[in-house]
Length: 196
Image 1 (cartoon, helix red, strand yellow):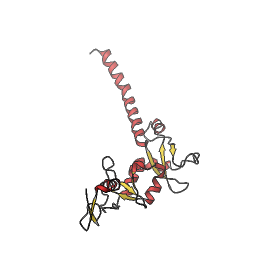
Image 2 (spheres, rainbow, N blue to C red):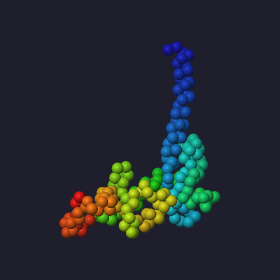
Image 3 (cartoon, rainbow, N blue to C red):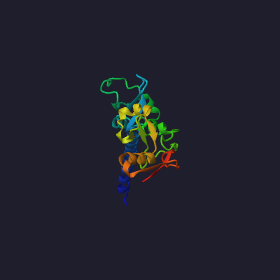
Image 4 (cartoon, rainbow, N blue to C red):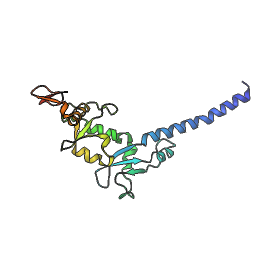
């Protein structure tokens, strides 16, 4: 390799390094701020679901922390779209803890299933998502909950583990295929057993 080629390679490496680290910083910032988050609205003191403009946050994060955070969407919009967005102050400290999944994991923590009474130690969100039950007994999967209704649902619904959600859904959909034998140790109800 001659001197000119070596010099060109070194110049290209020197130019590529800042580009690499700049792009890396942009991607990290984007991943950190994307997604729906549940925050406490300072104006009304209750929960609201917000989405940060992650692209804008990434583009203004040349030195690590974004210099300008702004909302892209909020469950209180459009009626309160001109608010001062004071809820964003919480996101500078640690946005990951405000992710909806994190909020739901904290909601399940320390609770037990309304059917089997099993404690929610470890919540699996990929393969065995827990569910909910309304006061009227309706079963509900989290996928059916709209984000703006999340605070209301968490305040009024009861937790149901994945096993009981599947079993109870089956019982409700195919009651003719289920034999209920009261008085035996039940899998999903301590008043009887479930046999199919």
